[in-house]
Length: 371
Image (cartoon, rainbow, N blue to C red; front, side, top):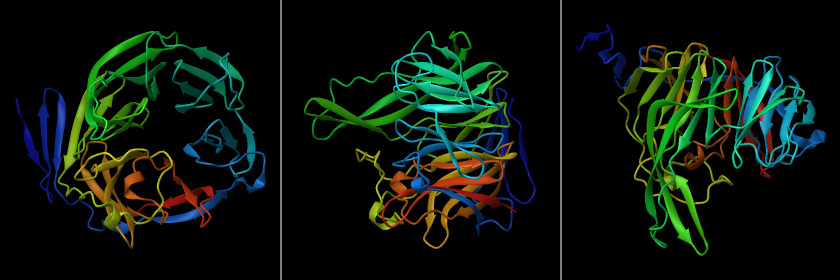
């Protein structure tokens, strides 16, 4: 059965197909005041001038319930208090309990930190003071730590592409499939049945193969019980109910893709140190990053205005396109690097890394005035 309804003011089609609510939004949102500039007020700025640590490329910044700020920077897992004062480095290098060779991602679960390391795969649980709670080793290979729900970790396993036929000069586009899984506290892996195909580009060098993604699996927890996902070049999102393991909605909007012209579109000249390979593309991915703000989903797009910044679309929990605004960003961010750039939305705050004229980074926390 197919049921179609139309909302007043904007013709947003909502279709129920096999229990999944499919929403096809128009080009413009409901809010007549859309397109404004998001108002931000700086709250604090963290630099390494205070001593005890150093900043090279801080990323993966999160705010704990008590206001503490955490970030990863190479072999540093740094903790700051709510006023930005350095507390300690929680990174302990090694292969024993509570030690890491690297940190790929981490989650703040109330007063507990769950830290994921690849190769060898393990999850280290500690309190926010760095005291070890447990080491958890999944029974199989996992690649991404996405969320935590109901005493289970939501993770993803990726397929291993065939690299033997990669061309030396031109390179190859590779199909990489992500399988969503649940990992229990004792390491047991349960397949969810949700599969997300993506594309990578690889090139052969003497003695090595380098690769970078064209599309990647993006995910953001929403309201502590859902996961918002995107994995395509075009504008499309899905919402997974983590309790029932059912995909409950899929939504998109009419969007004009941005042509791949980095010299003309990029607002600055800085190149991310993590960028190693230019992938073949004719347009930028429509969706660059996903955030959640209270009861809404924010989508950072590839649309850029030199006077305002990057366009952020706002959807409600039903997938309806309700608003948009421009997010002012540091002038040296290139559109090529936007998908990787360290940006965090937490509560009423936005945190971003900014670099001065000497390319020295700082973590800056802003209060969001969204209305």
